[in-house]
Image (tube, rainbow, N blue to C red; front, side, top):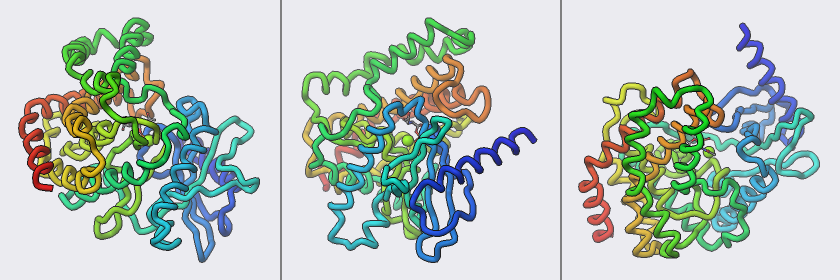
Length: 376
Ligand code: GN1
Ligand code: MG
């Protein structure tokens, strides 16, 4: 009962906020949408016969504290992508890029009287995203999608983009956050996760490869997506790439981080939060197909050192995700949305199982990458 009342309130709030944007037609309904861990997302339907589907989001401003900078980044990226695709015609551009809907006073976000921030995008119809992949074609499309994304943004000056969440993929920063959490131990959870902490700290040195290459100026900073979960790619009904979504973390970064984070979800035969870790095994043909798709777009611009950083990133990103989930568990679940009290712990164990599987199969993955670099 209580949660029903709360969700009716949320829906009412979402409709009230949506009314501040230039939507076509009258709003018919608003329903919670997607599986993001940070923002609240709603699908808005209107009675317009022309354009009637919108994606409304309440931005988590505890995490994204510079909402103005965030939305300017997204607008700049969207405009850049639209220019790159302009030759395809307006209709196609609308389908392949995200479109921000402005407020009645021409802003790209709206702040309500409770201090919450909202934004609206066009919802791209006839598309699908997948939490777990089904086919190699989908993996190939995912690889192309992120390769293309990096390529299309390669001539956008990184200095124009605000580093919206500094140190986002800096493993030293993430491990320091974990150490702080252990020291504070606000909800007495450290005692139950000692074995996981040992497993993490044993691998600390090995996970510094990319950080150190970056510090030695051996990796170029490019504009990267930084949240390349496979469900951030929209595919059309034939599983061709339609659009890359969730542009919140588009920032200067290293391409390997995008590769590694995509592989984290693509190669995993189970969900990111699978409680039965025996189900977490590698789907290596999907790694192969993603890699072929990615290299078909990225091979021309990748430097030799960037290529060398791809496999280290495949190990690093699930590891870093485990560090982040465990930090949040120890802190008492203040960052990620959780569906039940042990959710962050379950997520941590699932990611560490993936780290283990990747270690066992390191040679196979390295060989596949090398073969595809040669044959491309
Ligand atoms: C968060 O909100 P969502 O689900 O797109 C997180 C990512 C993590 C991901 C793990 C800003 O992304 O970094 O990889 O959860 N986003 C932020 O599923 O922290
Ligand atoms: Mg995200």
